[in-house]
Length: 263
Ligand SMILES: [Zn+2]
Ligand SMILES: [Zn+2]
Image (cartoon, rainbow, N blue to C red; front, side, top):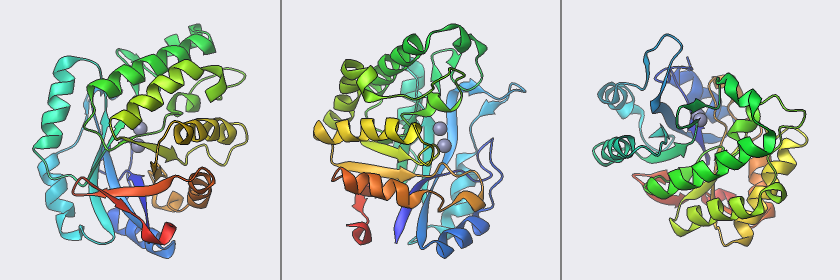
């Protein structure tokens, strides 16, 4: 069975998914799950509280469920600040995660989800800054297993055209994708926008280039925050990987594993 490698349960500040319901839904779709709860040192919730979770409680609560159908990971909000980088790296090294996905949710103090200042930048400037920042950040956080939702900013922008396309930023994209490949980090095919015209073609242009530059492996992630959404669009992600001869993988005890049934 294949793995959806990006899922949030109630350990994430923005999700309320029950793990048993998630497993039941996944089984009905013939899928397994990697849980990837939010841990963003550089973010705050609206009420000022931190975006993290109790790691000891997480491993205690889900440890008994860990196995063939469920693996335990984390979604780290990456940052360039040396102190955050050191803390994130130490966190990964001192806890028995199966998989670590790395995300850019913020450009330093600039929150891509909520910051209104983004409305004052042109699309070209915003995406350009995002791609440069993401490349620097990955370079400084090379211990992650996969880079999540490269098209994350597309979700929350308000331009007439929010699509991120390879051909609009070829040099910046090549730098970012090459940094992933050189550091043996996978590219995630995030399923959130993959069923939407325009966004699918944009993501596909990036996935195609990743393959052309020598990338071999992708992870496929629904970014599910509810059990109902598990399985949605997974086939579209698989098809995109297959189209560009990319191998879908997941990580178990930080080792790259190939879903044999998907080959
Ligand atoms: Zn994310
Ligand atoms: Zn996520």
